[in-house]
Length: 131
Image (cartoon, rainbow, N blue to C red; front, side, top):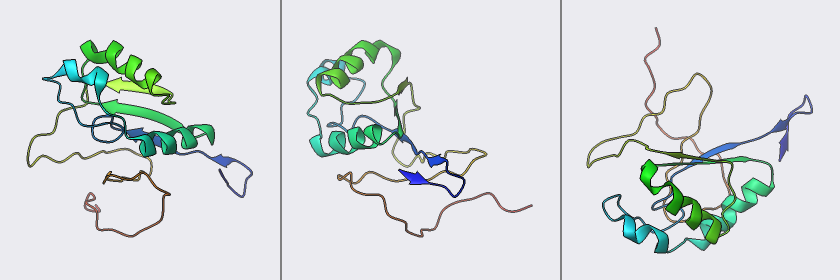
């Protein structure tokens, strides 16, 4: 954990997709494959580490409400620690982009196969034009 000069703990809030990030990608059109999706053990280990460090873990997935019980059972079976599960993320099609807009500072990280330590980097990002 990181402590601020005020003595407060800096807690990170991780909002993480499920399919393709903590297990193999399974499309909603094939829900029968969800219960046996292969886990990504390194991802789960890192997420559980963040949870144990006091960070907030939220899964935000395009899986639908009808997949809730299967998803909860899979998370429990694989020992995934988390605080919240949000279903129904809008599904992205080829060429679509997600844009997250909030009134607080946010960070975006694209998962590329490895959950490792977080490092600071400077990247070009899209922002609103200043008024």
